[in-house]
Image (cartoon, rainbow, N blue to C red; front, side):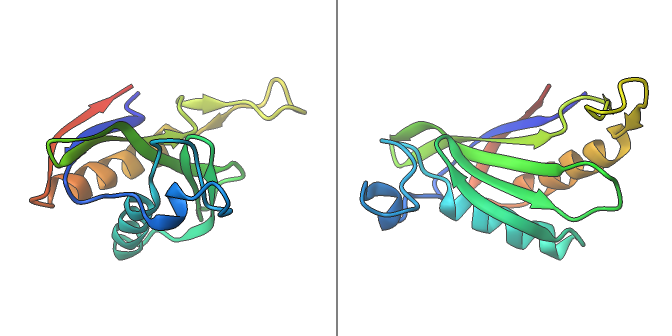
Length: 141
């Protein structure tokens, strides 16, 4: 099942607070994702998705998405290669990352999530491919 996207872009750069170790949005040396997270949130909002929670993590940004299911549908994003030649490589991944999830307290109950995940990944793929400063979009597992 397709759950990750990688691409190159010269559109996203670190914001000052991502570079300042004293700031609460500091991620890690060389890691940035705030502008990418903003771009994804705007694009998802335009496609009838609503971000309900967002936070920085030590690897990038985590954004949870409102939906009808009883599980967390979310995306994570970050750069994966620091800027070289005025562009960076980035990665976006979707959670859950499998077609079925099993709640911890109900071992034998299955929740089928593939349809929602595939729809979200397709929306992200279209969003990324539609921008002229984003290229080499690869969708993977």
